[in-house]
Length: 183
Image (cartoon, rainbow, N blue to C red; front, side, top):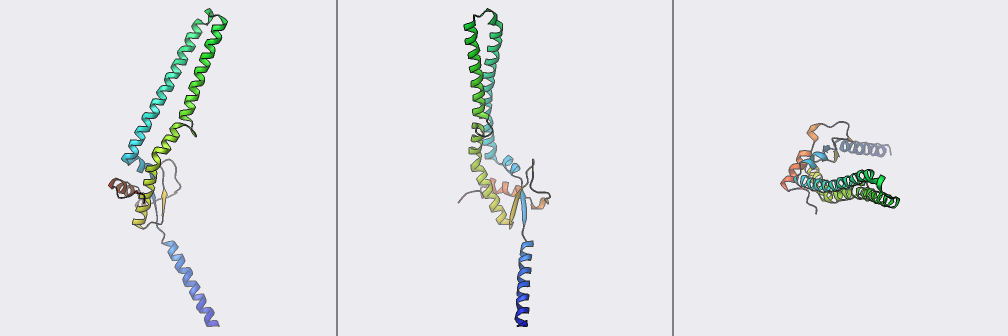
């Protein structure tokens, strides 16, 4: 019975040591997804398209603001000579113009529901999916168990040795077209 207990204890100790040794061999790497998206030609193209669309919306908003400003200026110059009914009509028109501009701005630029946010999400989602797949393939090819994202503006990583940076390997895989294809 003592021999069986001793043998069991040795087996348990060996198993624990094996599990502990395997846990210590986990390989960890990191990427900078902002750098990847900045260097990826298709992401650059999407960014340019989004900027052009947003610029046209901003131009329209500025045009509306100019019309309101000109209308208010004109009203202020002429209000002394206007009858009360004309004054009231013009004030209502200016208020409606301001409300249309406010609604347009909200429709296009609201941080949650605006068209700019929705368009960005729609255009970048396929690229982000492809990048994640390339990260996965690169990590598997190099034997990494975990990959963190080390952003330029924030990080979840307190220290990272640059030899574990997979960012440019992922970019290379994406540019060569050997990664990111979903199955």
